[in-house]
Length: 216
Image (cartoon, rainbow, N blue to C red; front, side):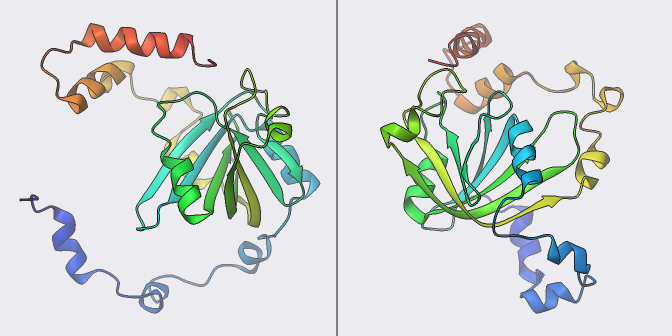
């Protein structure tokens, strides 16, 4: 039997529809609405060229959501034209959550992040997974031509305000917690795997090897 969570209780009297939700908030400013576009400007192209981290949101046919990071040197995301971008799929854990979702629904959302900068760029639209050789040979920023690329056709693109990064002190080391305040990656993985014969040392070695060969 699935254990009851706090969510089950809170969902009983949750906001029922969009009209009720809008009653809680003021309308967005004219600028917040007008800044949404359907194609890239020279300035948003420059933002993408500076981004070394992209968060990819996707959903499967049943509505199950996923957000996955993609990283590479600045400019690793290619702008194919004013309404199309392509993200090379670098070596990962091979779960293919994002790619499978895109194949299933043909949609994706992106947030481009630039280290040290608080302004981000949001991009949503149609999406597909391409293995076309002439595309993949252009996408070598992560080390070599990828097995596939996530291609997104822009339906909407706009810069997002920096408030979340400022509130979170994302680029302010003096506000960061000490390293020992959180469990290590290996400790989290060990707890998740629930394999009695596995040790922290085993996982640390696996993680180190994965990082060492991250472009293969």
